[in-house]
Length: 90
Image 1 (spheres, rainbow, N blue to C red):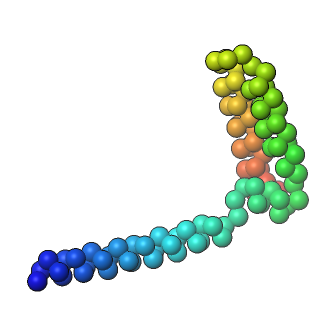
Image 2: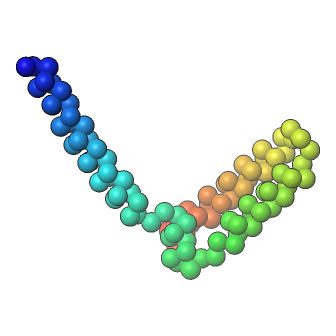
């Protein structure tokens, strides 16, 4: 009898955790992210798309195994992150 009670308790806990997780995800998805905030403020996303395009071009033209590609994509990540995060400050 205690085994069935334990299994029943586990099922109830699993259901409660699943409901709480679903509610958390719904709240998180409703919050605007940096890109959505940038678009809402009518900021252009051209710099972000431009840097990604230039990074793809640089990757295609770079020699195989080049460390420069890592530096290029690292710089792109920093530039794009800074651009999107400043959208919420203006």
